[in-house]
Length: 222
Image 1 (cartoon, rainbow, N blue to C red):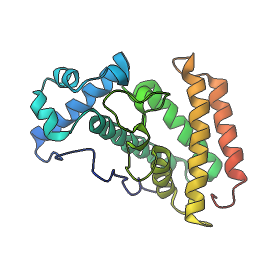
Image 2 (cartoon, rainbow, N blue to C red; image 1 turned 180 degrees about the vertical axis):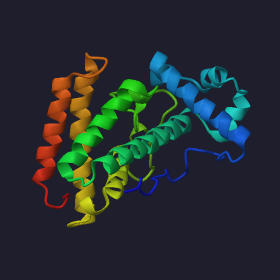
Image 3 (cartoon, one colour; image 1 turned 90 degrees about the vertical axis):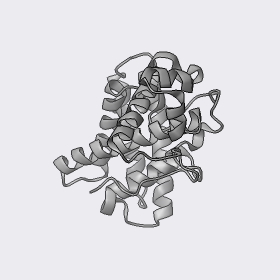
């Protein structure tokens, strides 16, 4: 298995992709600073000026890479997704052979592990969610890909990661099935973490059971 085809927004969240070591280090510091501030003040209060100050780079350096707050958050969401898929791929390789039930359990477990430990992940994961779009963000539903919503973009990456596991039936129907599964998992996991910093174990278990049961009824997905 591998991490699958990278999903990118049409315009791209990054103005200039870093190549040299110094630029790569600054780019990483900017995203790390953004993640830390998300945990402290949330997406609405976040500003590019504060991110640059936390990263100890001139604001002009930040704007060399990102057009503004939306592109900064999009790049962090993309990094989160890449990291998630890489970590999940390691788990899947260790658990091989893998069926839909094991894939589901490991996918949920890795998501929960990152919410508990990765800075900013609990606030952003693969795209902002909430009743209001934060200031400076035009459309929080399309941070990963301008053409599809965040969960569809994640579904496509998971579909690629699953390989043969998800290559039966109609690929478009499989993508839809995975998107619905992600929407359901999102809702239950938000509930699990709403009042429990590390997530309510009973609700996390119910999330796995819900998604396993749904996928088992969808012949296009397994």
